[in-house]
Length: 73
Image (cartoon, rainbow, N blue to C red):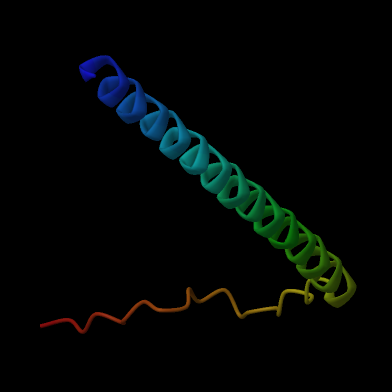
């Protein structure tokens, strides 16, 4: 009698492990799908940024930007 109880518990455990494996597999596929979408969006962003290009640097009069002039005291 006890053998059947332990066997039933073992079978139920195997079924639960199988269900968990299927659930985990589906979640992994969904994650990989989203990663693919993210890579596609990154490629689109890179293409858009390449179309914009870089602006030409403005010529300055030699003064550094962002530095304060020191007054003599």
